[in-house]
Length: 587
Image 1 (cartoon, rainbow, N blue to C red):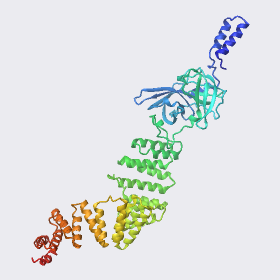
Image 2 (spheres, rainbow, N blue to C red):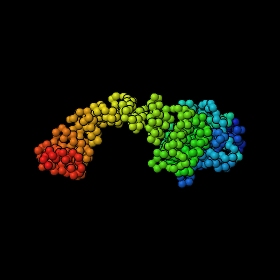
Image 3 (cartoon, rainbow, N blue to C red):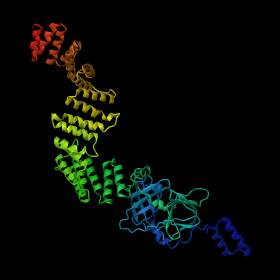
Protein backbone atom coordinates (compact mmCIF):
# COMPACT_ATOMS: atom_id res chain seq x y z
CA UNK A 1 0.00 0.00 0.00
CA UNK A 2 1.21 3.51 -0.82
CA UNK A 3 0.42 6.26 1.71
CA UNK A 4 0.30 9.84 0.47
CA UNK A 5 0.90 12.85 2.79
CA UNK A 6 -2.81 13.66 2.69
CA UNK A 7 -3.71 10.14 3.84
CA UNK A 8 -1.14 10.28 6.65
CA UNK A 9 -2.57 13.61 7.92
CA UNK A 10 -6.07 12.16 7.88
CA UNK A 11 -4.93 9.16 9.95
CA UNK A 12 -3.16 11.44 12.48
CA UNK A 13 -6.29 13.53 12.93
CA UNK A 14 -8.37 10.42 13.58
CA UNK A 15 -5.91 9.14 16.18
CA UNK A 16 -5.78 12.56 17.94
CA UNK A 17 -9.51 12.54 18.32
CA UNK A 18 -9.37 9.25 20.19
CA UNK A 19 -6.78 10.20 22.85
CA UNK A 20 -3.76 12.39 23.42
CA UNK A 21 -0.71 11.29 21.53
CA UNK A 22 1.82 9.34 23.58
CA UNK A 23 5.19 7.92 22.68
CA UNK A 24 3.62 4.81 21.12
CA UNK A 25 1.46 6.85 18.82
CA UNK A 26 4.37 9.07 17.92
CA UNK A 27 6.27 6.06 16.59
CA UNK A 28 3.21 4.98 14.65
CA UNK A 29 2.86 8.44 13.13
CA UNK A 30 6.54 8.53 12.24
CA UNK A 31 6.24 5.14 10.54
CA UNK A 32 3.17 6.21 8.59
CA UNK A 33 4.87 9.44 7.56
CA UNK A 34 7.60 7.51 5.75
CA UNK A 35 7.06 6.27 2.15
CA UNK A 36 6.21 2.61 2.42
CA UNK A 37 7.99 1.44 -0.75
CA UNK A 38 10.63 -0.58 1.09
CA UNK A 39 8.96 -3.77 2.16
CA UNK A 40 10.04 -7.03 3.71
CA UNK A 41 11.69 -9.07 0.97
CA UNK A 42 9.42 -11.69 -0.62
CA UNK A 43 10.35 -15.33 -0.07
CA UNK A 44 11.70 -15.73 -3.60
CA UNK A 45 14.18 -12.85 -3.17
CA UNK A 46 16.76 -14.90 -1.25
CA UNK A 47 17.44 -17.17 -4.24
CA UNK A 48 16.75 -14.60 -6.96
CA UNK A 49 19.29 -12.10 -5.59
CA UNK A 50 22.14 -14.29 -6.89
CA UNK A 51 21.06 -13.49 -10.47
CA UNK A 52 21.65 -9.74 -10.03
CA UNK A 53 25.19 -8.44 -10.41
CA UNK A 54 27.26 -5.32 -10.74
CA UNK A 55 28.83 -4.36 -14.08
CA UNK A 56 32.07 -2.46 -14.67
CA UNK A 57 33.04 -1.37 -18.18
CA UNK A 58 36.45 -0.13 -19.31
CA UNK A 59 37.75 2.02 -22.14
CA UNK A 60 40.60 1.18 -24.54
CA UNK A 61 43.18 2.38 -21.98
CA UNK A 62 41.74 0.06 -19.34
CA UNK A 63 40.26 2.92 -17.38
CA UNK A 64 36.86 2.46 -15.74
CA UNK A 65 34.21 3.84 -18.09
CA UNK A 66 30.92 3.09 -16.30
CA UNK A 67 29.45 1.04 -13.48
CA UNK A 68 25.94 -0.30 -13.21
CA UNK A 69 23.72 -3.36 -12.79
CA UNK A 70 22.51 -6.33 -14.77
CA UNK A 71 21.05 -9.77 -14.29
CA UNK A 72 21.20 -13.25 -15.76
CA UNK A 73 18.35 -14.50 -17.93
CA UNK A 74 19.86 -17.93 -18.58
CA UNK A 75 22.21 -20.26 -16.75
CA UNK A 76 24.56 -20.36 -19.76
CA UNK A 77 25.72 -16.81 -19.00
CA UNK A 78 23.29 -14.68 -21.01
CA UNK A 79 22.51 -11.42 -19.27
CA UNK A 80 20.99 -7.98 -19.84
CA UNK A 81 21.76 -4.43 -18.76
CA UNK A 82 21.41 -0.86 -20.04
CA UNK A 83 23.06 -0.07 -23.38
CA UNK A 84 24.67 3.22 -22.31
CA UNK A 85 26.64 1.32 -19.70
CA UNK A 86 28.48 -0.43 -22.57
CA UNK A 87 28.74 2.37 -25.11
CA UNK A 88 32.43 2.94 -26.05
CA UNK A 89 33.50 0.05 -23.81
CA UNK A 90 36.39 -2.17 -24.91
CA UNK A 91 36.12 -4.56 -21.98
CA UNK A 92 33.65 -5.38 -19.21
CA UNK A 93 33.38 -7.56 -16.13
CA UNK A 94 30.54 -8.45 -13.81
CA UNK A 95 30.77 -8.91 -10.07
CA UNK A 96 28.35 -11.39 -8.55
CA UNK A 97 26.74 -10.91 -5.18
CA UNK A 98 29.37 -13.27 -3.75
CA UNK A 99 32.19 -11.11 -5.10
CA UNK A 100 33.20 -13.30 -8.08
CA UNK A 101 34.55 -11.36 -11.06
CA UNK A 102 33.59 -12.81 -14.46
CA UNK A 103 34.48 -11.39 -17.88
CA UNK A 104 31.97 -10.32 -20.52
CA UNK A 105 32.95 -12.25 -23.66
CA UNK A 106 30.33 -11.35 -26.28
CA UNK A 107 27.70 -8.77 -27.09
CA UNK A 108 24.55 -10.65 -28.19
CA UNK A 109 22.40 -7.71 -29.24
CA UNK A 110 21.55 -4.10 -28.45
CA UNK A 111 18.80 -1.55 -28.81
CA UNK A 112 19.65 2.10 -28.31
CA UNK A 113 16.05 3.37 -28.32
CA UNK A 114 15.05 1.27 -25.30
CA UNK A 115 18.59 1.41 -23.84
CA UNK A 116 19.14 -2.34 -23.60
CA UNK A 117 22.10 -4.59 -24.25
CA UNK A 118 22.25 -8.36 -24.13
CA UNK A 119 25.58 -10.06 -23.53
CA UNK A 120 27.30 -13.26 -22.46
CA UNK A 121 29.82 -13.85 -19.68
CA UNK A 122 32.35 -16.63 -19.26
CA UNK A 123 31.34 -18.34 -16.03
CA UNK A 124 34.03 -21.00 -16.19
CA UNK A 125 33.11 -23.56 -13.54
CA UNK A 126 30.95 -21.07 -11.65
CA UNK A 127 27.30 -22.15 -11.37
CA UNK A 128 24.98 -19.33 -12.30
CA UNK A 129 21.51 -18.42 -11.08
CA UNK A 130 19.17 -17.00 -13.70
CA UNK A 131 15.82 -15.30 -13.28
CA UNK A 132 12.74 -16.93 -14.75
CA UNK A 133 11.13 -14.69 -17.37
CA UNK A 134 7.43 -13.86 -16.99
CA UNK A 135 5.84 -14.81 -20.33
CA UNK A 136 2.68 -12.72 -19.90
CA UNK A 137 3.78 -9.55 -18.15
CA UNK A 138 1.81 -7.59 -15.58
CA UNK A 139 -1.16 -5.26 -15.90
CA UNK A 140 -1.92 -1.77 -14.62
CA UNK A 141 -2.72 -1.83 -10.90
CA UNK A 142 -0.64 -4.89 -10.09
CA UNK A 143 2.14 -4.80 -7.54
CA UNK A 144 5.77 -5.35 -8.60
CA UNK A 145 9.10 -5.44 -6.79
CA UNK A 146 12.52 -4.12 -7.76
CA UNK A 147 15.26 -6.61 -6.86
CA UNK A 148 18.51 -4.69 -6.24
CA UNK A 149 22.12 -5.80 -6.43
CA UNK A 150 23.24 -6.59 -2.91
CA UNK A 151 26.28 -8.26 -1.36
CA UNK A 152 24.75 -8.33 2.12
CA UNK A 153 22.46 -11.00 3.49
CA UNK A 154 19.57 -8.60 3.87
CA UNK A 155 17.63 -7.60 0.77
CA UNK A 156 15.68 -4.36 0.53
CA UNK A 157 13.23 -4.97 -2.29
CA UNK A 158 11.31 -1.87 -3.36
CA UNK A 159 7.63 -2.42 -3.96
CA UNK A 160 5.56 -0.36 -6.35
CA UNK A 161 2.61 -0.53 -8.68
CA UNK A 162 2.13 -0.57 -12.42
CA UNK A 163 0.42 2.66 -13.42
CA UNK A 164 0.28 1.98 -17.12
CA UNK A 165 1.22 -0.73 -19.63
CA UNK A 166 1.59 0.16 -23.30
CA UNK A 167 2.75 -1.86 -26.29
CA UNK A 168 6.34 -1.33 -27.40
CA UNK A 169 8.04 -2.66 -30.52
CA UNK A 170 4.79 -4.31 -31.70
CA UNK A 171 4.56 -7.17 -29.19
CA UNK A 172 6.30 -6.18 -25.95
CA UNK A 173 5.28 -4.08 -22.97
CA UNK A 174 6.57 -0.75 -21.73
CA UNK A 175 5.62 0.03 -18.15
CA UNK A 176 5.05 3.20 -16.19
CA UNK A 177 5.69 2.43 -12.53
CA UNK A 178 4.82 4.15 -9.28
CA UNK A 179 8.13 3.35 -7.66
CA UNK A 180 11.14 5.44 -6.54
CA UNK A 181 14.32 4.69 -8.51
CA UNK A 182 17.85 6.04 -8.23
CA UNK A 183 20.61 6.12 -10.83
CA UNK A 184 22.33 3.28 -9.00
CA UNK A 185 19.34 1.02 -9.55
CA UNK A 186 19.13 1.29 -13.35
CA UNK A 187 18.89 -2.14 -15.03
CA UNK A 188 17.76 -3.88 -11.86
CA UNK A 189 15.00 -6.43 -12.50
CA UNK A 190 11.32 -5.74 -11.88
CA UNK A 191 9.70 -8.88 -10.47
CA UNK A 192 6.11 -10.10 -10.16
CA UNK A 193 4.62 -11.67 -7.05
CA UNK A 194 5.75 -15.14 -8.18
CA UNK A 195 9.38 -14.08 -8.38
CA UNK A 196 9.50 -13.96 -12.19
CA UNK A 197 11.31 -11.12 -13.90
CA UNK A 198 9.02 -8.79 -15.82
CA UNK A 199 11.14 -5.85 -16.90
CA UNK A 200 14.33 -3.81 -16.53
CA UNK A 201 14.27 -0.51 -14.72
CA UNK A 202 15.31 2.35 -16.96
CA UNK A 203 17.12 5.54 -16.11
CA UNK A 204 14.99 7.66 -13.71
CA UNK A 205 12.63 10.12 -15.31
CA UNK A 206 14.14 13.09 -13.49
CA UNK A 207 10.90 15.06 -13.22
CA UNK A 208 9.37 16.70 -10.15
CA UNK A 209 7.52 13.48 -9.36
CA UNK A 210 10.47 11.29 -8.32
CA UNK A 211 8.40 8.13 -8.01
CA UNK A 212 7.16 7.93 -11.60
CA UNK A 213 9.58 5.71 -13.49
CA UNK A 214 9.71 3.35 -16.43
CA UNK A 215 10.69 -0.19 -17.26
CA UNK A 216 11.04 -2.13 -20.52
CA UNK A 217 9.79 -5.68 -21.08
CA UNK A 218 12.52 -8.23 -20.29
CA UNK A 219 11.22 -10.41 -23.14
CA UNK A 220 12.30 -7.69 -25.55
CA UNK A 221 15.78 -7.75 -24.06
CA UNK A 222 15.92 -11.55 -24.07
CA UNK A 223 15.02 -11.72 -27.75
CA UNK A 224 17.70 -9.30 -28.89
CA UNK A 225 20.17 -10.85 -31.31
CA UNK A 226 22.71 -9.92 -33.94
CA UNK A 227 21.26 -10.33 -37.42
CA UNK A 228 23.14 -11.28 -40.57
CA UNK A 229 22.57 -7.82 -42.05
CA UNK A 230 22.56 -5.75 -38.84
CA UNK A 231 25.78 -6.95 -37.23
CA UNK A 232 27.65 -3.89 -38.45
CA UNK A 233 25.12 -1.34 -37.25
CA UNK A 234 26.48 1.84 -35.61
CA UNK A 235 24.78 0.80 -32.37
CA UNK A 236 26.85 -2.37 -32.15
CA UNK A 237 29.99 -0.77 -33.55
CA UNK A 238 29.89 1.72 -30.67
CA UNK A 239 30.79 -1.19 -28.38
CA UNK A 240 34.34 -2.49 -28.76
CA UNK A 241 33.64 -5.85 -27.10
CA UNK A 242 33.49 -8.85 -29.42
CA UNK A 243 30.09 -9.43 -31.04
CA UNK A 244 28.49 -12.86 -31.11
CA UNK A 245 27.49 -14.53 -34.35
CA UNK A 246 23.82 -14.55 -35.38
CA UNK A 247 21.80 -17.30 -33.70
CA UNK A 248 21.44 -19.67 -36.70
CA UNK A 249 24.07 -21.24 -38.91
CA UNK A 250 22.58 -19.84 -42.11
CA UNK A 251 22.41 -16.31 -40.71
CA UNK A 252 25.94 -16.70 -39.39
CA UNK A 253 27.19 -17.70 -42.85
CA UNK A 254 25.60 -14.59 -44.34
CA UNK A 255 27.15 -12.53 -41.54
CA UNK A 256 30.57 -14.01 -42.41
CA UNK A 257 30.07 -13.03 -46.04
CA UNK A 258 29.05 -9.49 -45.08
CA UNK A 259 32.23 -9.17 -43.01
CA UNK A 260 34.64 -10.87 -45.41
CA UNK A 261 36.20 -7.51 -46.35
CA UNK A 262 37.53 -6.98 -42.84
CA UNK A 263 41.25 -7.27 -42.17
CA UNK A 264 42.63 -10.84 -42.36
CA UNK A 265 43.19 -11.21 -38.62
CA UNK A 266 39.79 -9.82 -37.70
CA UNK A 267 38.05 -12.00 -40.28
CA UNK A 268 40.05 -15.03 -39.12
CA UNK A 269 38.80 -14.39 -35.58
CA UNK A 270 35.22 -14.45 -36.87
CA UNK A 271 35.85 -17.67 -38.80
CA UNK A 272 37.41 -19.33 -35.76
CA UNK A 273 34.37 -18.39 -33.71
CA UNK A 274 32.04 -19.77 -36.36
CA UNK A 275 33.95 -23.07 -36.47
CA UNK A 276 33.81 -23.36 -32.68
CA UNK A 277 30.09 -22.58 -32.68
CA UNK A 278 29.27 -24.85 -35.65
CA UNK A 279 31.99 -27.55 -35.57
CA UNK A 280 30.12 -29.76 -38.05
CA UNK A 281 29.92 -27.08 -40.73
CA UNK A 282 32.18 -27.77 -43.72
CA UNK A 283 31.45 -24.26 -45.03
CA UNK A 284 33.30 -22.57 -42.19
CA UNK A 285 36.37 -24.75 -42.72
CA UNK A 286 36.37 -24.05 -46.45
CA UNK A 287 36.15 -20.31 -45.89
CA UNK A 288 38.99 -20.37 -43.39
CA UNK A 289 41.12 -22.39 -45.79
CA UNK A 290 40.44 -19.81 -48.50
CA UNK A 291 41.53 -17.02 -46.14
CA UNK A 292 44.77 -18.87 -45.32
CA UNK A 293 45.60 -19.21 -49.02
CA UNK A 294 44.56 -15.72 -50.10
CA UNK A 295 45.89 -13.66 -47.18
CA UNK A 296 48.45 -15.71 -45.23
CA UNK A 297 50.71 -16.75 -48.05
CA UNK A 298 53.21 -19.10 -46.47
CA UNK A 299 53.67 -22.87 -46.29
CA UNK A 300 52.50 -23.10 -42.68
CA UNK A 301 49.13 -21.55 -43.52
CA UNK A 302 48.85 -23.59 -46.71
CA UNK A 303 49.29 -26.67 -44.52
CA UNK A 304 46.48 -25.41 -42.27
CA UNK A 305 44.34 -24.79 -45.35
CA UNK A 306 44.96 -28.33 -46.58
CA UNK A 307 43.99 -29.71 -43.16
CA UNK A 308 40.79 -27.63 -43.12
CA UNK A 309 39.87 -28.85 -46.60
CA UNK A 310 40.53 -32.46 -45.62
CA UNK A 311 38.30 -32.05 -42.56
CA UNK A 312 35.60 -30.34 -44.66
CA UNK A 313 35.66 -33.28 -47.09
CA UNK A 314 35.04 -35.64 -44.16
CA UNK A 315 32.17 -33.59 -42.78
CA UNK A 316 30.23 -32.65 -45.88
CA UNK A 317 27.73 -34.82 -47.66
CA UNK A 318 28.42 -32.81 -50.82
CA UNK A 319 31.80 -34.32 -51.74
CA UNK A 320 31.70 -32.77 -55.19
CA UNK A 321 31.55 -29.27 -53.74
CA UNK A 322 34.47 -30.02 -51.41
CA UNK A 323 36.65 -31.16 -54.32
CA UNK A 324 35.58 -28.08 -56.27
CA UNK A 325 36.50 -25.81 -53.34
CA UNK A 326 39.97 -27.34 -53.13
CA UNK A 327 40.34 -26.96 -56.89
CA UNK A 328 39.51 -23.25 -56.62
CA UNK A 329 42.06 -22.78 -53.83
CA UNK A 330 44.80 -24.33 -55.94
CA UNK A 331 43.82 -22.14 -58.90
CA UNK A 332 43.86 -19.06 -56.64
CA UNK A 333 47.45 -19.76 -55.72
CA UNK A 334 48.58 -20.85 -59.20
CA UNK A 335 47.22 -17.70 -60.85
CA UNK A 336 48.56 -15.30 -58.21
CA UNK A 337 51.25 -12.92 -59.46
CA UNK A 338 53.57 -14.50 -56.88
CA UNK A 339 52.40 -18.11 -56.57
CA UNK A 340 53.71 -20.11 -53.63
CA UNK A 341 55.32 -23.45 -54.44
CA UNK A 342 53.55 -25.89 -52.15
CA UNK A 343 53.62 -29.67 -52.52
CA UNK A 344 51.73 -30.71 -55.66
CA UNK A 345 49.45 -27.66 -55.80
CA UNK A 346 49.66 -27.12 -59.56
CA UNK A 347 47.05 -26.69 -62.28
CA UNK A 348 47.33 -30.43 -62.95
CA UNK A 349 46.38 -31.07 -59.32
CA UNK A 350 43.47 -28.63 -59.68
CA UNK A 351 42.37 -30.50 -62.81
CA UNK A 352 42.46 -33.78 -60.90
CA UNK A 353 40.25 -32.26 -58.16
CA UNK A 354 37.68 -30.92 -60.62
CA UNK A 355 37.54 -34.33 -62.28
CA UNK A 356 36.73 -35.82 -58.87
CA UNK A 357 33.97 -33.25 -58.45
CA UNK A 358 32.54 -34.03 -61.89
CA UNK A 359 32.64 -37.75 -61.11
CA UNK A 360 30.30 -36.99 -58.19
CA UNK A 361 28.13 -34.41 -59.92
CA UNK A 362 28.63 -33.09 -63.45
CA UNK A 363 27.47 -29.56 -62.76
CA UNK A 364 27.98 -27.00 -65.57
CA UNK A 365 29.97 -24.86 -63.13
CA UNK A 366 32.45 -27.69 -62.67
CA UNK A 367 32.62 -28.20 -66.44
CA UNK A 368 33.38 -24.53 -66.92
CA UNK A 369 36.22 -24.72 -64.39
CA UNK A 370 37.53 -27.80 -66.19
CA UNK A 371 37.45 -25.89 -69.47
CA UNK A 372 39.35 -22.99 -67.92
CA UNK A 373 42.01 -25.35 -66.60
CA UNK A 374 42.46 -27.15 -69.92
CA UNK A 375 42.70 -23.78 -71.67
CA UNK A 376 45.35 -22.55 -69.21
CA UNK A 377 47.30 -25.77 -69.76
CA UNK A 378 47.17 -25.33 -73.54
CA UNK A 379 44.87 -28.33 -73.98
CA UNK A 380 42.49 -26.56 -76.35
CA UNK A 381 40.60 -29.58 -77.68
CA UNK A 382 39.68 -30.67 -74.15
CA UNK A 383 38.85 -27.07 -73.23
CA UNK A 384 36.54 -26.76 -76.24
CA UNK A 385 34.72 -29.97 -75.27
CA UNK A 386 34.18 -28.71 -71.72
CA UNK A 387 32.87 -25.35 -72.94
CA UNK A 388 30.66 -27.18 -75.43
CA UNK A 389 28.99 -28.88 -72.46
CA UNK A 390 28.61 -25.63 -70.52
CA UNK A 391 27.07 -23.82 -73.49
CA UNK A 392 24.28 -26.35 -73.63
CA UNK A 393 23.38 -25.72 -70.00
CA UNK A 394 21.46 -23.01 -68.19
CA UNK A 395 24.62 -21.20 -67.08
CA UNK A 396 25.89 -20.38 -70.59
CA UNK A 397 27.02 -16.76 -70.78
CA UNK A 398 28.64 -14.47 -73.31
CA UNK A 399 31.96 -15.32 -71.69
CA UNK A 400 31.54 -19.11 -72.04
CA UNK A 401 30.51 -18.82 -75.69
CA UNK A 402 33.45 -16.56 -76.39
CA UNK A 403 36.02 -18.72 -74.59
CA UNK A 404 34.77 -21.70 -76.59
CA UNK A 405 35.46 -19.66 -79.73
CA UNK A 406 38.95 -18.84 -78.46
CA UNK A 407 39.66 -22.51 -77.75
CA UNK A 408 38.53 -23.44 -81.25
CA UNK A 409 40.74 -20.74 -82.76
CA UNK A 410 43.72 -21.93 -80.74
CA UNK A 411 43.26 -25.44 -82.11
CA UNK A 412 44.47 -23.96 -85.41
CA UNK A 413 41.92 -25.70 -87.63
CA UNK A 414 41.43 -23.22 -90.50
CA UNK A 415 38.48 -25.23 -91.83
CA UNK A 416 36.37 -24.27 -88.80
CA UNK A 417 36.52 -20.47 -89.02
CA UNK A 418 32.77 -20.23 -89.61
CA UNK A 419 32.20 -22.14 -86.33
CA UNK A 420 34.27 -19.52 -84.55
CA UNK A 421 32.04 -16.81 -86.00
CA UNK A 422 28.93 -18.70 -84.89
CA UNK A 423 30.22 -19.09 -81.32
CA UNK A 424 30.96 -15.39 -81.02
CA UNK A 425 27.53 -14.65 -82.47
CA UNK A 426 26.02 -16.75 -79.68
CA UNK A 427 27.97 -14.61 -77.18
CA UNK A 428 26.57 -11.44 -78.77
CA UNK A 429 23.04 -12.83 -78.84
CA UNK A 430 23.01 -13.18 -75.05
CA UNK A 431 22.47 -9.39 -75.10
CA UNK A 432 19.28 -7.69 -76.22
CA UNK A 433 19.22 -4.91 -78.78
CA UNK A 434 19.98 -2.07 -78.70
CA UNK A 435 23.31 -3.46 -77.57
CA UNK A 436 24.93 -2.03 -74.43
CA UNK A 437 28.54 -0.93 -74.48
CA UNK A 438 29.51 -4.24 -72.80
CA UNK A 439 28.94 -6.12 -76.05
CA UNK A 440 31.51 -4.03 -77.97
CA UNK A 441 34.51 -6.36 -77.34
CA UNK A 442 32.57 -9.34 -78.74
CA UNK A 443 31.55 -7.32 -81.83
CA UNK A 444 35.20 -6.46 -82.41
CA UNK A 445 36.30 -10.08 -82.05
CA UNK A 446 33.62 -11.23 -84.48
CA UNK A 447 34.84 -8.67 -87.02
CA UNK A 448 38.28 -10.25 -86.86
CA UNK A 449 36.80 -13.75 -87.06
CA UNK A 450 34.79 -12.74 -90.13
CA UNK A 451 37.99 -11.58 -91.79
CA UNK A 452 39.58 -14.96 -91.08
CA UNK A 453 36.47 -16.61 -92.58
CA UNK A 454 36.77 -14.55 -95.78
CA UNK A 455 33.82 -12.23 -95.16
CA UNK A 456 35.38 -8.76 -95.17
CA UNK A 457 32.24 -6.75 -95.92
CA UNK A 458 30.47 -8.32 -92.92
CA UNK A 459 33.59 -7.54 -90.92
CA UNK A 460 33.30 -3.88 -91.90
CA UNK A 461 29.70 -3.88 -90.67
CA UNK A 462 30.87 -5.18 -87.28
CA UNK A 463 33.63 -2.58 -87.16
CA UNK A 464 30.99 0.08 -87.81
CA UNK A 465 28.80 -1.35 -85.02
CA UNK A 466 31.79 -1.31 -82.67
CA UNK A 467 32.51 2.32 -83.61
CA UNK A 468 28.91 3.32 -82.82
CA UNK A 469 28.86 1.47 -79.48
CA UNK A 470 31.98 3.37 -78.43
CA UNK A 471 30.58 6.65 -79.75
CA UNK A 472 33.62 7.06 -81.98
CA UNK A 473 36.09 6.77 -79.11
CA UNK A 474 38.39 4.42 -81.02
CA UNK A 475 42.16 4.27 -81.56
CA UNK A 476 44.54 4.06 -84.51
CA UNK A 477 44.55 0.24 -84.48
CA UNK A 478 40.79 0.20 -85.03
CA UNK A 479 41.05 2.38 -88.14
CA UNK A 480 43.92 0.29 -89.48
CA UNK A 481 42.00 -3.01 -89.10
CA UNK A 482 38.81 -1.57 -90.54
CA UNK A 483 40.86 -0.28 -93.48
CA UNK A 484 42.23 -3.77 -94.09
CA UNK A 485 38.70 -5.22 -94.06
CA UNK A 486 37.45 -2.47 -96.38
CA UNK A 487 40.35 -3.05 -98.71
CA UNK A 488 39.61 -6.79 -98.86
CA UNK A 489 35.96 -5.97 -99.49
CA UNK A 490 36.81 -3.55 -102.30
CA UNK A 491 35.56 -0.61 -100.27
CA UNK A 492 38.51 1.45 -101.44
CA UNK A 493 37.57 4.93 -100.28
CA UNK A 494 36.78 3.61 -96.78
CA UNK A 495 40.22 1.98 -96.72
CA UNK A 496 42.00 5.18 -97.80
CA UNK A 497 40.14 7.32 -95.29
CA UNK A 498 40.73 4.91 -92.40
CA UNK A 499 44.44 4.62 -93.13
CA UNK A 500 44.69 8.40 -93.12
CA UNK A 501 42.95 8.51 -89.74
CA UNK A 502 45.20 5.77 -88.36
CA UNK A 503 48.30 7.75 -89.41
CA UNK A 504 46.90 10.94 -87.87
CA UNK A 505 46.44 9.16 -84.54
CA UNK A 506 49.79 7.34 -84.69
CA UNK A 507 52.05 9.41 -86.96
CA UNK A 508 55.19 7.39 -86.19
CA UNK A 509 53.74 3.92 -86.69
CA UNK A 510 55.69 2.56 -89.63
CA UNK A 511 53.20 -0.25 -90.34
CA UNK A 512 50.38 2.24 -90.81
CA UNK A 513 52.52 4.57 -92.90
CA UNK A 514 53.82 1.89 -95.29
CA UNK A 515 50.29 0.53 -95.73
CA UNK A 516 49.02 4.01 -96.47
CA UNK A 517 51.80 4.54 -99.01
CA UNK A 518 51.06 1.19 -100.69
CA UNK A 519 47.27 1.71 -100.84
CA UNK A 520 47.52 5.29 -102.10
CA UNK A 521 50.00 4.20 -104.78
CA UNK A 522 47.62 1.44 -105.88
CA UNK A 523 44.85 3.99 -106.38
CA UNK A 524 47.12 6.56 -108.08
CA UNK A 525 47.11 8.93 -105.12
CA UNK A 526 50.75 9.79 -105.79
CA UNK A 527 51.14 12.81 -103.51
CA UNK A 528 49.69 11.00 -100.48
CA UNK A 529 51.79 7.93 -101.23
CA UNK A 530 55.00 9.98 -101.53
CA UNK A 531 54.38 11.78 -98.21
CA UNK A 532 53.81 8.48 -96.41
CA UNK A 533 56.80 6.73 -98.03
CA UNK A 534 59.17 9.61 -97.26
CA UNK A 535 58.06 9.58 -93.64
CA UNK A 536 58.89 5.88 -93.44
CA UNK A 537 62.39 6.49 -94.82
CA UNK A 538 62.90 9.15 -92.15
CA UNK A 539 61.83 6.81 -89.39
CA UNK A 540 63.55 3.70 -90.83
CA UNK A 541 66.31 4.66 -93.30
CA UNK A 542 66.92 0.99 -94.18
CA UNK A 543 63.32 0.10 -95.09
CA UNK A 544 63.65 -1.11 -98.72
CA UNK A 545 59.92 -1.26 -99.48
CA UNK A 546 59.51 2.43 -98.65
CA UNK A 547 62.21 3.42 -101.17
CA UNK A 548 60.67 1.21 -103.86
CA UNK A 549 57.18 2.73 -103.38
CA UNK A 550 58.70 6.20 -103.27
CA UNK A 551 60.61 5.56 -106.51
CA UNK A 552 57.54 4.28 -108.33
CA UNK A 553 55.39 7.24 -107.25
CA UNK A 554 58.05 9.79 -108.18
CA UNK A 555 58.44 8.11 -111.56
CA UNK A 556 54.69 8.34 -112.16
CA UNK A 557 54.99 12.07 -111.57
CA UNK A 558 57.80 12.30 -114.16
CA UNK A 559 60.53 12.93 -111.59
CA UNK A 560 62.92 10.36 -113.11
CA UNK A 561 66.11 11.46 -111.34
CA UNK A 562 64.46 11.35 -107.90
CA UNK A 563 62.81 8.07 -108.84
CA UNK A 564 66.16 6.51 -109.83
CA UNK A 565 67.78 7.70 -106.58
CA UNK A 566 65.04 6.10 -104.50
CA UNK A 567 65.08 2.85 -106.51
CA UNK A 568 68.86 2.60 -106.31
CA UNK A 569 68.60 2.85 -102.54
CA UNK A 570 65.95 0.10 -102.58
CA UNK A 571 68.30 -2.06 -104.71
CA UNK A 572 71.17 -1.46 -102.29
CA UNK A 573 68.92 -2.63 -99.44
CA UNK A 574 68.14 -5.86 -101.32
CA UNK A 575 64.75 -5.18 -102.88
CA UNK A 576 64.34 -7.83 -105.65
CA UNK A 577 62.01 -5.64 -107.76
CA UNK A 578 64.21 -2.54 -107.81
CA UNK A 579 66.45 -3.69 -110.71
CA UNK A 580 63.57 -4.09 -113.20
CA UNK A 581 62.03 -0.80 -112.12
CA UNK A 582 65.30 1.02 -112.67
CA UNK A 583 65.38 -0.19 -116.26
CA UNK A 584 62.07 1.63 -116.82
CA UNK A 585 63.75 4.93 -116.01
CA UNK A 586 66.92 4.32 -118.09
CA UNK A 587 69.39 3.32 -115.41
